Length: 461
Image (tube, rainbow, N blue to C red; front, side, top):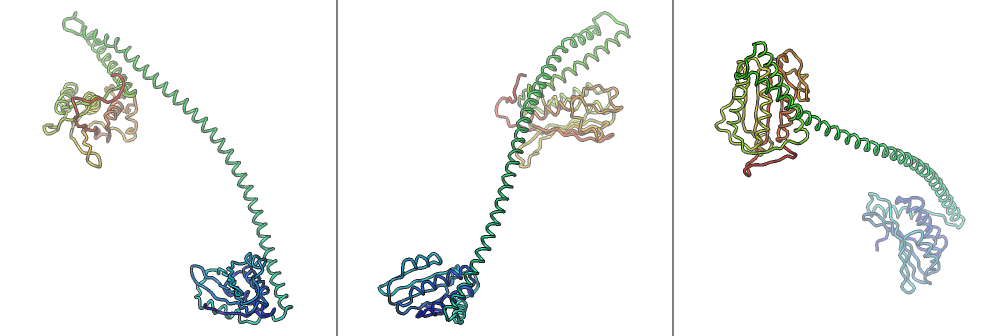
C-alpha cells in the first residue's frame, strides 16, 4: 500500500507528535479548524489506547477522485482489541473502518478534503512536510497545545452560537414580517373578492337590464312598425286613387298637393320598412337561406331598377359583363338588399360622372382555399370627410353638409348593409375622398352547392 508518511507509536511523546502532526497535515490539505481538531483528537485517542499493544504505526496517504480524501491507517500487531467506548468516541468524530484478525488489527480513517487542483503526488508531499516538522516533546507542551486548540475551538463555537442566535433573531423578524404581510394580503384579497362579487352582481344586473331594454326596443319597433304600416299604406293608396285617371278630375294645385302626400307617405313607409329590417337583423330574426344565385340576372335587375329611378339625373350606371362568372351559393334576397342600399347611396349623392358596379370571385384567404364573391360599388359623388368615416355605420347618423339638401334619408342604409353582410359571413369596407367619390367593397363567402338549398340562422322570418 502506498504511504506518504508514517509515525511509530511507542511512547506518550509519539502520541503527542501524532496529534500535532495530524493537525498540521489536515491544515496543509485545506481542512477547516474544527475538522483539524476532530482528526487530531480521534488519532490521539486511538494512539493513547494502543500504546503497549506491540508494534503500532500510523500511516498517511491521499487519494484523488470526484472528491480528494485523506486516508490515515493505524495498525498494531499485539495486545487486546480496542475498547468499544474508544471506538464509539472516535466514530463520533470521524468516519472509521475497524478490522481485527487475531492479535493484528487496523483502524482506517477516511477524511474528505475540500476540492482542489492538487495531484496525489503534490498532496503526499504536503503530508510529508507537515508530519516531518518538530512537535511538542513533553507532556506539558502537549497539554499547552491541547489547551490552545480547546480555546480556539471554544471561541469558534461561541462565534458560531452567536451567529446562530443572530440568524434565529433575523428569522423570527422575517417570520413576523411574513405573517404581517400574509395577514395584510389576506385582508386585501378578501376586500378584493368582496368587490369582485359586488361587481359581478352589478354586471349581471346591468346585463339583465340591457337585455330587457334590447328586448323592449325590439318589441317597440316591431309593434310600431306594424302599427304604422296600415295607416301609411292607406294614405298612399288613397293618394294614388285620387291621382288615378279614372277618378274625378282635380285641379292642378290639388294634384300637386296629393302628389306631395303620396311622396311623403312613401318616405315614411320606406323609413318604417328600414326600421323593421334593422330590428330583425339585430335580434337574429332574419334567416339566411342559401341557394344558387345567377349573378347576371341579379346585376341586370339592379341595373334596371336604378336606371328607372335615377335615370333622369344623367349619371350612367356602369355594370360588368358577367358571361364567365359562375353561379354562386348565397342568400340572394339579403345580398340584393345589401347592394340596393349601397347603390341607392351612390346614385343619390352622385350628380356628375358615373356609378360603377364590379363583380368577381376572388381568393381572399391566406391559404387560397375560400373563394369569395367580391362586389365593388364606386361613385364619383360628393364623398365623405375623413372625420366622418368612423361614424357612417352608426344607426340614424347622417353626414351633415349642403349635399343633404333634397336627399331624404334615414341614416340606416350603411348600418343595415353591414349587418346583413356580416350575417352572410362577409365583410363590408368603405373608403372615400371628399369631392372625388366613394368606394364600397363587399366580400361574402361562396359556398359549394350541396343540395337544392341551404338554410342557416334562427328565428321567425
